Amino acid sequence: MGTINNEQLINNNQNKYKKTEIGEIPKEWEVKEIGEIGSTYNGLSGKNKDDFGRGKPFIPYKNIFDNSKIDINYLDYVVIKDDENQNKVKYGDIFFTTSSETPEEVGMSSVILDEIDELYLNSFCFGFRLNDFSILLPEFARYLFRGGKIRKIVSRLAQGSTRFNLSKTQFMKISIPIPPLKEQQKIASILSTVDEQIEQTDVLIEKTKELKKGLMQKLLTKGIGHTEFKKTEIGEIPKEWEVIPLFDTGEYINGKAFKPSEWRDEGIPIIRIQNLNDKNATYNYYNLEVDKKYHVNKGDLLFAWSGSIGLHIWKEEKAYLNQHIYKVIPSENVDKKYLYYQLSRQIEILLELSHGSTMKHITRKNLKLVKIPLPSPKEQQKIATILSEVDNQIEEYEIKKEKLQNLKKGLMQQLLTGKKRVKV
Image (tube, rainbow, N blue to C red; front, side):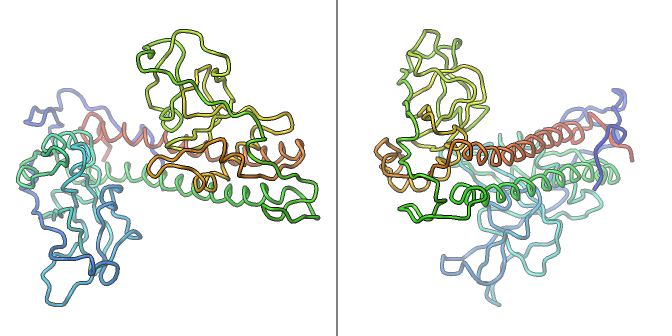
């Protein structure tokens, strides 16, 4: 696998562009309607629920939606009789989702770049078969149809109110830019190199998460270097450890019930659950003082106890705490990071005890019912340090992945429009 460098790219001179119905593109590029370069076919038809779960492989909707290239390890199965007339998938076919809940998600594409003897397509997508690979390469189509420009056109074609659908007739009339074959090959090679790096980083993230899971199971129940254990109501733990209800590990302070009428565009940010789960979520602000118990500072332990339940260490500057989130102030003999990991481990048990069929709530009563093992403060710190180091490694990989995704996005914007050219 290679690396991406600017030596592979050249800026396009303005006088080497030409004006077309889809905007300015390099002079050597062509413009063709999708219908000129291939034909569509439908997915499975005439199937009922009893036909699924065995038989021949088919590509499920989510495989297409989630991946620009079909993941052949993620196939479903369906019974196909000998006399059935179903369309088989071929190498190089491009698939499109026909409907979704939002127009932005209609017409997501994926390409099959593997040879499989007998493979079918789900009913909620359609296939597109290229007439000739000498006009458009499947490897290039993988990125072309996921590019921002074509995605916007497809989204605008989506029709519906509660569910949006893509008209194949309108889709086939879309005009697309087609570079020379050698340029298609080079663009596809550059973008697939970045994709490989993203995939490798994903593998590292998953492996490190598995390592963390195993370490949590071992360290939070057996500790470090113990040889003598005792039986307790929560299982076997080191002889020197105590058993303590979660409620007694610290003070659980619920946030303030800010009214929407109190929200402002500036001031101190208010931490809502969406701000804990999505770093891009917008903040509401409050420009008056509140009781100090609602103040949140960098490093504070927060516990979202309603809806999207989870533990968080606050990494930003001063903020105010909204309702449905506890600020947890650990007791003197409890290490904050150790408590963070123990609470994280107990989430499933707490959810089983919680109320609410659709929206789960973890109450103080639940915290009194669930008990955890408690080592000495010194051992708590050692355990927390080991687990924090693994978390830091996961974070490093996730930052690397985000940078690669941004690199790919930038390259797609430049290379698929011809703003930057590749050396061929």
